[in-house]
Image (cartoon, rainbow, N blue to C red; front, side, top):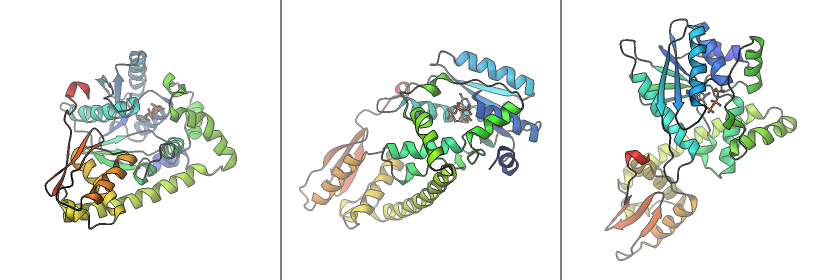
Length: 322
Ligand SMILES: Nc1ncnc2c1ncn2[C@@H]1O[C@H](COP(=O)(O)OP(=O)(O)OP(=O)(O)O)[C@@H](O)[C@H]1O
């Protein structure tokens, strides 16, 4: 899909905000949306307080928005990562919280209903490869959805089918400037090594990889949806917190699926594979009333209390450490 086709196919609810970092992709998206829907588009910029260049990024965004005649709202965050959380995850979490805060802070203007993010087809392929590099399950391999609901807002990724090179070409044809975030070149980040080393090799070996990887991601997303449905049904049957005897009636794969779902939904906890395997072994060993179970799972512990399986975190993170 080319850039103009992607913009023509984009159907957000209005008013729309474009998440604008000042980088190439969100610059192109903001320009195209502002031209297509004059007066109905705003720009949201998140100022990442920890990055030295953050003031320059904000300045650049402010002058570009002024030229385009698009209102800009800026939110400042200090995205320190909590123990066990990657800096990228912390920045993403802080960014979504900022978008929700910005959408709610419109004053007398009508409330923003949609937010457009500028991830493209190369980003999607990188996300699939990143998921594989971590040994992710279906939820990770599903990569990024084109549309998602979050905090009462519709999030859209209208450029998900557009190769990065198309977006750069669109900007260059219009002689538009953008800023390059220096951290995008930092080879300490796996995503940047994927972009610099794997994507050029994939382009040579399978030129269609962007669309085939995206198709695999959609298959994974569909299958993951079924796993969630199954987990919801199983959780309703075994109870919350789970009754161990009822849990033990399920196959091991279904136990893993329902436990992962319960831990994530009820406790925002994601066990690693070794922890989940250990938990399943312990559940299997819980054949007698006297069998104790107490193991580390994610940031807390799973424990047997009578007939029930509980999870608790002895020291939940404070707001300051989040
Ligand atoms: N500081 C920010 N403020 C507002 N939106 C952002 C910010 N950083 C990223 N985004 C949004 O999230 C999307 C994905 O972020 P990512 O860090 O992968 O992209 P990026 O390298 O900043 O890309 P871009 O070239 O679009 O600016 C961006 O395309 C943009 O829409």
